[in-house]
Structure formats: structure tokens, C-alpha cells
Length: 190
Image (tube, rainbow, N blue to C red):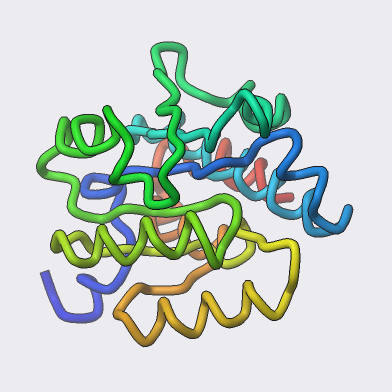
């Protein structure tokens, strides 16, 4: 694999992690931000399903913040066990590392979720420390305060995460318009 290719997402080496896109947390976001994150996270989940990529989802203290937004959760794989947590870094939650490690050949972790400067950032930093290649989908992450989101993106870039966007991820997963799922996935982003 060439250097440039190694910097792209690959369907055969990726797993998608959806962090804390929960009802009460989403309600705290500006409406246009909530809508963008929910829409793009749903696109990533649908593309992951079509390409048979593993998915992990977390919920931060669901008793207080509610469960995952219905517009996102409806796209979860049927057998998905949501990892409930109180720690901010997902890797500190019981079951998260086992879910991640269940797919040992998949060293690329694609992150979407809330909040960029807390749970997404801490999860990404710990995954980078464990040797994973981390892609943070900028248009599928949010913070209540835009300055906090921007700071998180800058810190993530400095730490070695690749900051990307939804369309880049899905087209990198496809790699070619001749891919059998090309039409189905491009229909998601229109």
C-alpha cells in the first residue's frame, strides 16, 4: 500500500464508532448543528451497513442523557450492543475495547459523535495511543460551543488524527465508481 493510499480510509480496514449522539445531548446543540451531525452520522451508518463494516456505538450516562437519537439508532446493525459508559473516553468503558478488538485487522477507526472536545477527543487520543489510525469526521461531530469544536479539531490534527468529512469517507470506502454499492451509497448523499 502506498503512502497516499495509507492515508485514505479503506472499507476492508475500517470500523465506525458513533459516540454519544443522544437525545438530551443533541437537544443542547444549536438546531442546525444537531441536524448536520444526525444526518451525516446516519449516512455513515448506512454506508457502513452496505459495505458490511463493523459499527460500535456508545452512550454517555443514558439515564441522564437519554438514548441515541432515533434518526441515528434506526441505522444501527441489528445485533449492535450499545456500550453504555460514564467515562469520557470510550476506551474506558466496559465492552468497548473488546468490541474494537473483535475486528483485529481493522486498524482504522472512523469517529462521529458528540461532544468533539470531550468524548470524541478523549476517545481519539486514547485510540491513537493504542496505535490505531483515527479519522474524525468533522461534519459528523459537534460541541455545544463552536470554539470548543474548532479547538478539538486543531488538537486532533496536532496529535496525528486525520480530520475528514462524510463524503470523503464514503468515497474512500468505495474507491471506484464501478463498486457494486456505488449507486446505493451515492444516493445517500444527494
